[in-house]
Amino acid sequence: MMTPRRLCQTLVSTLILCATAFAGGPLYVGQGGSIDGKPYTWDPAAMPIKYTVDPGPMSSNAGKVVVDNATGLQRVQQMFMNWQNVPTAALSYSYAGQILAAGGYVKGVDVASAFQFNAIVGSCNSALQNPIIFDSDGSLMTSLGVDSDVIGFTNICATSASTGHITAAMITLNGVWINGSTPMTKSEFSDAITHEMGHFAGLDHSQINVDVLQNGSCDLDTIAGMPLMFPFSVCPGHSDSGLPAIPTDDAAWISHFYPGPTYATTYGLITGTIYFSDAASAAQGVNVVVRAVDDPNTLQDESRRVTFSAVSGLYFTSNPGQSISLGSDGKPDNANGSPYGSRQAALIGYYEIPVLPGTYTVQVESINSAFAQGSSVGPLDPPVRNPGQDEFWKNNESAYDIPLQRDTVTVTAGETVPNINIILNGTQPTFDQYEDETQLFETLPPLALLRAEVC
Image (cartoon, rainbow, N blue to C red; front, side, top):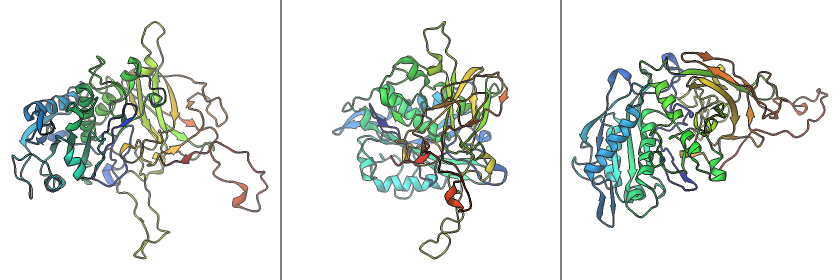
């Protein structure tokens, strides 16, 4: 889902499927069988993805049409083309006409009520269509109980556990943000539409250049490196800034999940595992950011512009389940856990990041505590929070190294650079003397505890 904040307006992704997202890349991940640990994507053999569109206006104000249907349809088609035109991705879309009749919804009628919306959702849940709904004046959002700040939201309506494919999805857009009553520009709204289409394709939120939330500095380098899938709308739109519609990180991930013929000769891969301070226990939910080494001979800051990210444990389930506690029915509560995400222990702290050829630093950081619920980044919601410093990868990793000291990683096209593992400094030990009275260890000094923090 997307809500604008300047500074800060959230781009929240609301999903009908009840599962936590797996960010820095996939929205949903398969569990078991041939799809275990693999992202849910649309079937590449069934392209183009066909979508239907609301016949009403995209935006209105006090009953007056601001953006008519023809213009709205054209914008939707252009935004889908932004993703389709990524040269290293094999992804395509096709307009299939107006939203189909469904239950109490009659084809050709502007979607304006919760009753109509729910009927269309039912058809999407049955994988009969992939609708794009225009809420021209925000009244539909209000009737659905959605916050008025929301620009739009995406529903992944149906998936196939046998194939690992998304089989239906829908997008709802709030036209209030371009009816002249808000400061959002057309370019920013276009970014919002394109953001929701990223979710539609199976991408989750990403966190890069997150310091903009504190310093509010929307310089061109920061905007260029911020993913379109960043959860908050903070800076001017990409086209307003003369930048490509699909930033570096988003182009890498959409190509990773929908690889075109040139993907393997364009990108390399950095992989590794994030560990707690014991150097043995894997840490899930830590943001990993890869930044190009800045070229001092250019006016641009490549370390801000050429960036890629993932969240550790992005392919592991967010909810393993347990059979100890009992539910209200007296049976084990959540014994099976989430149906999404692998149960392979080796994936708990694992990350992988597709990158362009180059020389990079690799660092870890907390997911911002405000990125929760619809704005979540990564498999854990709320995110884990580390009050310590950011930490960079270095050749001789330990729990006692200097956090800002760093070594570089050079990647060539088609190459996978493995074992870029990071041991977090100062996290809570997995064992202490209070667990067994026979232990004689002295009490440890306070450490920077990786803790869950609700925003």
